[in-house]
Image (cartoon, rainbow, N blue to C red):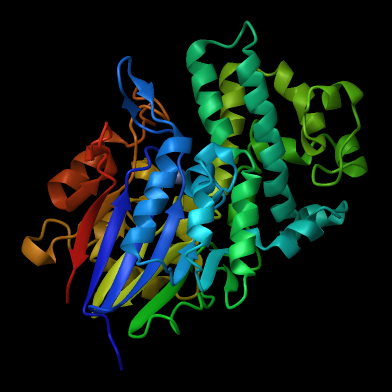
Length: 444
Ligand SMILES: [Zn+2]
């Protein structure tokens, strides 16, 4: 049976975002390429005066580089979750300079996404009833509604009420932008998955990725996200905290019974005039009464919730293990590593991971220290035994040093540097002649 001779991994400079091309090399003429995510919410600064790079200029260039590296054809596209910093590049509108058209032209045979992106499930979620607030489908509806909420938050941040300081405005804008719906990218992913000869796959813990038939000699495991039959945890994440998003999502009893969030919501002409999407109108009033940290907590909870729908993939090839967890946070991880019937087996499997794509751009809660990091046997090894880590990040965009939430989190970054062989997109140049990616080769 054919087995890859090596694996090439390219980590592209997309600022705050992820974009990895994983190429399984069978021979000089047979390479099979899997693109894992392609998105950005902010590019590094360039020029004088220093200004953030433009996605509409940069992303088409990255897409062209990907097309060149894969010789015009992709075996698969993986979109780990619906955040803009992972999928915006799949958009076909002007925002990212139609970079998604280039990717669609590479005709991926499989388009792999988490189960929460199944368009049928999303459609059903709109018919939510009182009871279905408990059902998995209304969870999907809730995720969809979040995009409306994110849009309201973004509008509020843009208008900057007098009580909103510049720091809060900056963070709300950034988180809001990450969570808006990105319809063009979502539509293009659906189009690629339903193209002739292509298969769309919506995966959950333990399900078939459909990649193994296309990648002989490679074992591909889907470790996350769990679906809601497997665990209620990702939904319950904030439900018990009265100040948090999921409590508000359910709303006060009167509102909840009459009009659940996923089901239309109260009509409000003035809100419509403001361009607030219908599914977020009731929320708008609450937003406008909220202040500072409270508002930020809700937006952060919303952001975490979407991160916990992230695919976690483990590739095994010639005895080496490559782990790509997207932005999965602790609630998503804890199913695979603690609660699943095969959790013990999974922990043993992951202990000797050779390549680790650092979760969530190096944030504090995406690389579980006790459950994952401390188990990695290849930390502190030398030569080809040393753990290879891949980071895609842009400092200064997410969280704050003062409350130890900065991304990338300094102690994690220090540990990655000290104990592993780290490649970081933030070390790539981004100037007149951008260096588009770092490249790592994995051999048996
Ligand atoms: Zn991300």
